Length: 311
Ligand SMILES: [Zn+2]
Image 1 (cartoon, rainbow, N blue to C red):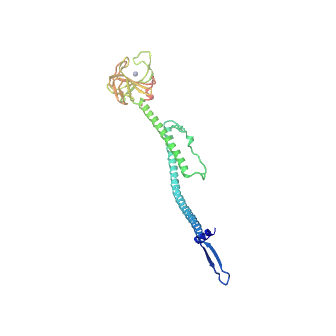
Image 2 (cartoon, rainbow, N blue to C red; image 1 turned 60 degrees about the vertical axis):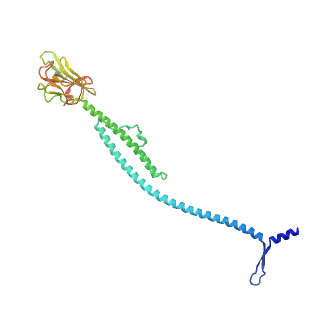
Image 3 (cartoon, helix red, strand yellow; image 1 turned 120 degrees about the vertical axis):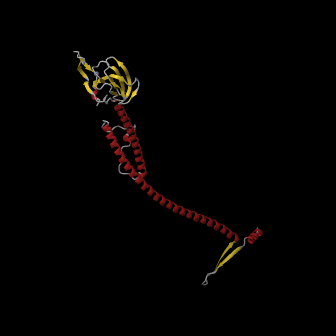
């Protein structure tokens, strides 16, 4: 054992550090081996590395926190700008709502002109109750952007609804115009004199029998033009017993007109005519005492007094 101990002493020598205090106190000495210094060095190295790691980590955390704070400030500033923009959009929505209310008033006015009254149901199939005004004091949790989105959705639905109702009104007006065009309202000849009214009369040929007259007789110069009282299609054009040269026009919507005793016919069966178009000329053909046009108006197949429609 002795030689090994001596060998270790030689490879790992002991050092002594003397500490000599002032004022005559006893000196103190510290003994240590080189291997201890090496171990101490390793430990110090590890401690330093850990320390450096901690410092790096801390400084990174501080940097990250500063960065987050800057991002938060930037986000808040951006949010304020966005909220201002949304505020303006909300004001614009309010303005559009007012315009929509004006459109609704105009729509109601058009309906009144059409002879309708009251608020009409939604024409687009949209349930209005789903988007009629709702709300109350704004909850802190509700973001302005959500309010805007909700208002915008409501507006879009209202626009759709208005579009549907206006399209419906346009359809009704077109139908009304077509019906109006089909209505025989034009006096069938230029001027002239009414010689016989619609309804009961004494027989024009002096017979004692009572005669029921299904139209209006308008005397005019022989050869004066006879006009279509409304647009339509020629249903019949030719000689008819009693009526002489005769034309009947189908106008649609249940309206028909007939013209008799003409000297000449200017149209053919199946032909389309417009209101005021010449269909023939005044004459005295058939059961007639002088040049006149016998004018009949039929509504749903029933003869009607022409003076109720013609002006
Ligand atoms: Zn007649």
